[in-house]
Image (cartoon, rainbow, N blue to C red):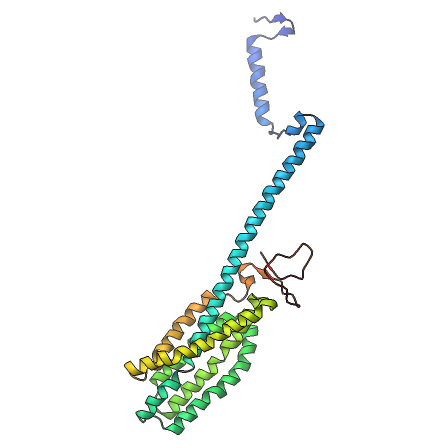
Amino acid sequence: MEVGFVGLGGVIAPKRARVSAVSGYRRECARRPRRKVRLAESVSSDEGKVFAESSKEVVNAISDEEISEGDHLQQKGFKQWRYRVFFGLYASYVVYALTRATFTFISPTLQKQRLLSLAEIGAVASAFPMMYGGSKLISGFIADNVSPRLVLGSGMILTGLANVGLALASGFRGFGMTWALNGLVQGVGAGAVARVLTMWYTRKERGFWWAFWSTSSNFGGFLAPLVCGFLVSNFQWQAGALFPGIGAIVLGFLMIPWLRDEPEDLGYTIEHDPKGSSSNSRPAEGDEKDSYFKV
């Protein structure tokens, strides 16, 4: 039989009972969920208020810094995508302009080799603008209802095939049909580009970027006599249409995954102001007139 001892605080339990009580207390503490203790409660109420306010200011400062850094990265990514899309549109239309001029620079050789007469060359050449004008009307409707990047890339592939067909054609009908087909598919480029540009650029900045893009047709026209003249002079006349056609086919397949129809495809949203506000600054809270992107 174990006997307890009497101390200043009362009866002291036997050793075995004390060990059992301590073990039970530890098990009870292990089962209890741990609580976060507020540091402010351990000090006076005034000091607690000061500490709470200071902590709140620190948290807000950290949050604002994180948000600012996130916005900076998002804006940087948005600008990079705009440059990427514009570069794709510009390069695409350079190729469009190049492949619409190939017949002009191979026709002297066709006449020299008596494959076409001068009258037949004029008739073939006139088929292009007639088909080109009609296709612009149709392509605008298509670009509004179908993915414009798909329209732009498919048009490049088709104009490349038309130029390959021109290189393989023979006789007045063969040249006439392939060149008329080229005019038909060439018209889809402008409508698709207009749709993509208006989606990625606000009204206020659209004039500059549209003017900049329009120089692509001039640059393509500048390259056409150099490229086609070099190919016809150093190879046969077929090379003047064949190699530009192959290049257009390759670029058309590349541009479809390269471009994006609109910022929403990447999670961005541009708020277009009817009056043409700038998109270079984030709008103030509650102000929906400025144009900017959101994620």
